Image (tube, rainbow, N blue to C red; front, side, top):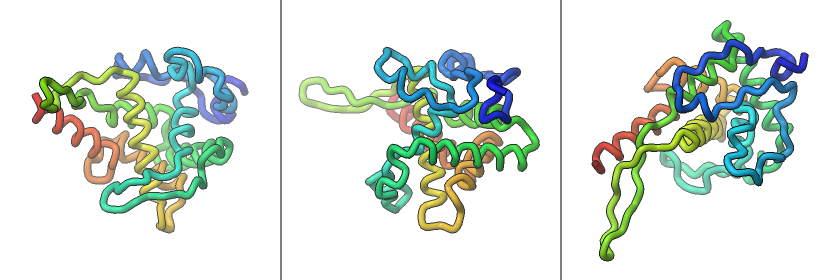
Length: 202
């Protein structure tokens, strides 16, 4: 049982086609993806944490606090610190993904992360009091962080003040991003926006 996530999903034979992400995506066989922060003070310790737990960690945020797609998302701390609640949401979302796609939901999540991870970003540099933006390559750790953040943010936005539950919104975002559906996937729209800004800053 311990080699299956939540006692249901096998992490063996999961294919990661993006080689740069493969170094940072951990698929350790663990029954409950909860490491109690034991890697938090190690350099690059988060690369040792199961990717499903990292997704749950990203859900534990108090809203954006700023305008996102024309509205301010504030969850008033409803998810902050509630790790078991976040894990329950992720488990329900993976169950929905499995029922809809008839695939291993961990493989669908990996495809979604590969599609949502930007390859270029912009950074601000200053010379002689003049600031401007230049295009830079994105490290593999940051690519994965950005993909996880955008998928979890899309789930929060998709369920905020709407009849859809957080787990349903998360499942819908994972499936649309894994398919490469540009119209439905917020994470892919953000990836394209980031890469478009970097192209213009070259």
